Length: 253
Ligand SMILES: Nc1ncnc2c1ncn2[C@@H]1O[C@H](COP(=O)(O)OP(=O)(O)OP(=O)(O)O)[C@@H](O)[C@H]1O
Ligand SMILES: [Mg+2]
Image 1: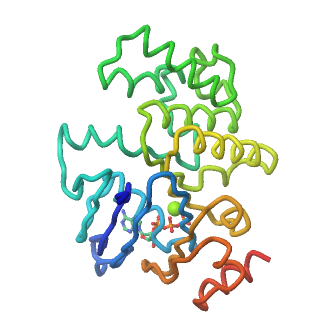
Image 2: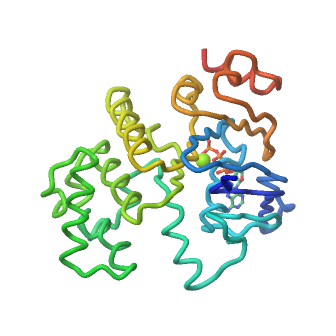
């Protein structure tokens, strides 16, 4: 039987805040993602979507619960094991320009993870150029700085960087939300092609219900830190079960 690429159980995050009561941003999140599956994560602003993404990538430590990634318990890994997670999961953020070091070229940013996994400098540079081309950019963009490219181009470079370690899971946190509609549509086409080529699984965080219905296989709906509905994408939009999902859909119309 095929094992999930990601299995999250009872995942919670409580933030300690100075002078204020603790705040639980995510409570008891339980879900899994199969290899090659595209799962949408929707919910209002502040519902805990990015907090989940950050726990899965271990940018944040969970307060409780477990995270199994590619067959390994990564809930509390540290040091070298934590760095090795880059091979299993990558994230693409909403603001691509901020996600690159402004003093380094795009090529450097993409090659960095390859170098961390032992590739030599010229091989890594060539591979970075190939990845840029795969993501629809000219090879000589390896020498461009983030400020020298458009938002859409920079997001393509961020996707190239995420593909570099060939991870079986990629998390997109509002990765197309800041782009204009035509650029967004072309990036979505690219993500579809990449998924087909690599059989990568996606966790796709997005506000746009129409896009999620069209792009994802399955959808998780979050409200105030809890997953309140989980269903195939077509079902979430055609026959939402939870009142909050209906509310999200109404708001989208
Ligand atoms: N470091 C932190 N300390 C305290 N509270 C935090 C921290 N990070 C996030 N929160 C709170 O946790 C809640 C969930 O935040 P999160 O960023 O996960 O929401 P989101 O669903 O991604 O929202 P959006 O759609 O606006 O991106 C919010 O109320 C936020 O203010
Ligand atoms: Mg967010």
